Length: 129
Image (cartoon, rainbow, N blue to C red; front, top):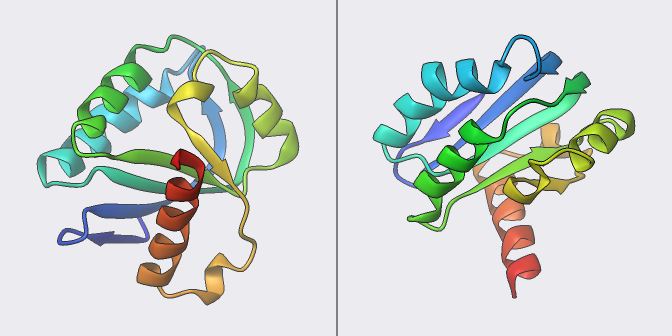
């Protein structure tokens, strides 16, 4: 976790390595060990820095559906930022793409967390309008 703002209800989390839902059920571990804790604390907007997620193996959609249902009550969202093209291809061809937003912003490291959040939030609203 890079940053959490409990008043503005968002978290910025950097992911590294492989995202394997098929064998390891990584989404279950992420959901139960981190996301559930954050949502209880009022976090419903998630920015995942994914430029170092080099592989994705899809599995069930149950945890994505559950997570989305929980955060949609608060107009929440899940953003994957800067995912490598080969990994994004696998995500987009899975059954979970409807639960996630994908964006690119390669200057995110130069932003303060609140500025990055505002940028992401504005991109979401542009898409929804």
